Image (cartoon, rainbow, N blue to C red; front, top):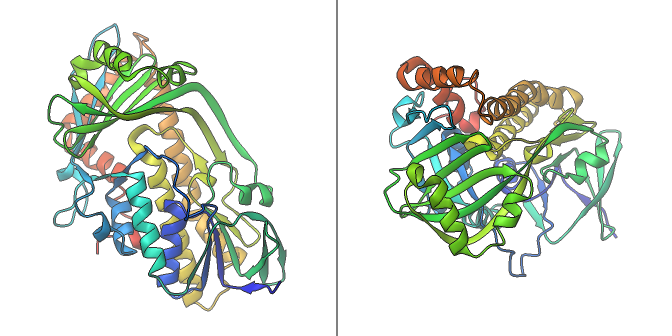
Amino acid sequence: MAQRESEIVIVGAGPTGASLALALAQAGFETVLLDARDLTATPPQDTRNFAIVTGSWRLLDAVGITPALEGETQPLHGLEAVDGGTHWFGAPRVLFGDEDVPERGEGETLGHMVEAPKLQAALDSAIKATGKLTHLSPVRFAGYETQPGKVIVRLEDGETISARLLIGADGVNSPVRTAAGIPTEGRDYGKSVFAANVTLSQPHGGVARQLFTPEGPFATLPLKGDRANLAWYMKRGAPEAMAKLPAEEVEAELNHRFAHFAGEMKIDGPMGSYPLILKIAERLIDDRVALVGDAVRRINPLAGQGLNQGFRDVGALYDAIIEADRAGLDIGSPQTLSAYQVSRRFGANSAALAMDGIDRLFSNDAALTKPVRGLGLMLADRIPPVRRALAGVASASGHGLPSLMQPR
């Protein structure tokens, strides 16, 4: 079997891998995208919804995805938080809104809620139409070895691909990360998240709302048509059991517990659950290997930062590759990959630890921490510089962002 030649091999065709493949191919790099999916088969049901923030939306626009999503998203206009519990029930605090986004372009919002299948379909369609991008499916990564000036990628069917750079965008249990021998650190929260879409009895106005309870947050993220994607954090076992109950029983419990916060809710579609874990790779790179997205980190999904951190990886790695190529340097060299790691390691780990810290601070009913939490929410609500700072971080629209996430 002849060896295939390319410049870059990307393992994983989810949102991070696909968007990076599109960006690099559009920049002129010969790119092979390895996709484990069988695109001729009926895809498994995917009920996920992504909160795509301002900077990430700009990245998707830069690679030509947003026109295909026109009319399919729910714009996000604000984030509201409430501190609940037995000591007192805090007042709703609007932490920030569209007007707080730094350097906001005409018509830009905090972000967009996008159904996962629609985002993937838009990416898949763009991949089919892009030159210099070879999309192999269904194929599975089997390993790699490095040789002087190149990396040889092995597939399970025996085919090999020679490239200058291998990129792992292959999820939280990344085979590329495992093959590179990159260890991870983290913890199991002992919690899971119950997830479902619901119809609401009152308009949401495009505002994401989060109620902090002693057992964990309860959040509603706005969807089209006064629907919402809800996430309810509970001790491990409870969400898994709840997802198996009849919808009527779940609705009764939801409305008994949270109708005062979100109004009456009715389950709209399948229900599910997933475990809450923290997993961070000790490094983002190895010899001619770089990791992006969930292959780098799985973080607490508070504020919907998981995929958005992955898009920041995409933007930073793209810039490192582009700058190296313009300077006549090897795109898979230690110098190039170190530039990527330096640009992302601190920010990504800070985001992961910030989400972990917020969970620890708010997921209790201690009287001593209540005033601290209340003061923090009040400051965010009432002081414009604090609001703008929070909005800049949450929406990925501040200074120092990758070129693909800058205003166009």
